[in-house]
Image (cartoon, rainbow, N blue to C red):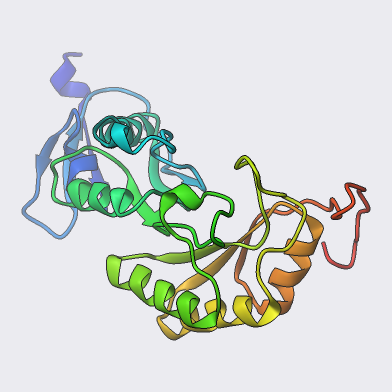
Length: 231
């Protein structure tokens, strides 16, 4: 048979940019109908917690950072990822990337974003611009992130891989963590907690977070003790 005999029609819901890549598209309806070449068609994939930009510490590299983010978004889409959750981006970079994808300027998957992760002054990932101390500052930052377009509010309950931080010690008081969850829920958003150590896991459960990222059972003294009840 000829190539035209083996062409297939697929209905693609979501970003027009995803449908347009390498396809002939009829956008007359509410979905994107695309005639695709005779290649394998796999179910859509969702990737969670993957930063689309990885240059983090050099403000002078912001142009390269934007290009890298766009390139990584395109690569993710080409590999079959149609939804990607990025839970930590510098400034408003990831929001701008999502706007570009939705407007068809850039090829990429559907993005679910937190924007800047909330941290203490000098805390894990402070260079993303999400430093806040005290309940008033935390409430203000949550509201600002919602205004910018955050789908999920993420906070660092412990340190992490950032130089000078301790991944196994708590950052915020129980009251501070609860106020972040409260503000996120008031805005209809999920609240996510970075928990590199056991104390972060326990504190995030007590505060009512919806999601936990990493979740180890390493204690502040460096010992490891699995807690089945917490798990």
